[in-house]
Image 1: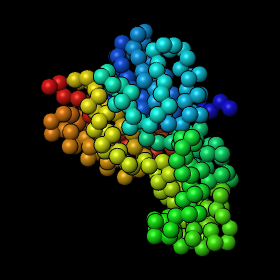
Image 2: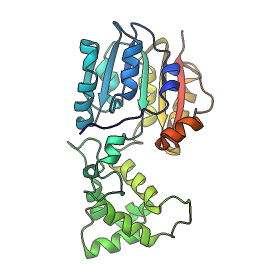
Image 3: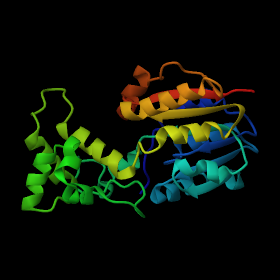
Image 4: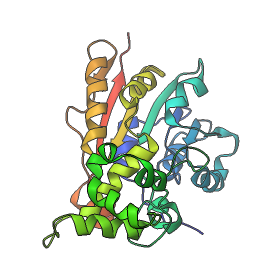
Length: 281
């Protein structure tokens, strides 16, 4: 299936990375290659890109989409936290992390990220490892589900195993206050919390950003797009700590999507972009 993909904050990312001909870049969450394609077009004819993603299915599609760049791209099925090891002694001119989930992941009922269509309650970005959302909601004790409307989940799973997205969404809606017009569906935050837990999205995020920043050449830039306040806080604190000696903050406050982009791509409404530059010293 060919997936339509709108990269978030594309113009802002390219400007923030200051992509140059012949430069070496890293996309640590390459997804469906929206940002990566533009980077490779700008750093041609001899610039390079390390394309990393923990989702093997997305990476397979990305290999096809970036075939035009030939040997200028190196692919790695890995977590962005592994980028320093993948680079070894090499240093990059720019590193990008887009911490959101892709349209392909959201739109595929079989991945379990969305409750718009029924599907297996999985939510793993890397389906080759880890514990699925099904295992969490059916096995974790109530006190560990405290932020996931625990009592409703525990009561429902006593009657039948929770295995599908719409099944969980219905349980959450019954337990929560009914949303008023314009309010966010109460299942949204539960699904987000589950996804963060399943994929360990906050585990060592600040430490990873710090390690990645140290993989830059002097003057190189790291760009991070986050999609919820917990992620953004980790990035902000990591940048602030490094700014004392190693980084210059290019953005004091996160950049947000313009009204025009919001209209064209509503999924970017929560995107926050932060940029820092490696000190020349």
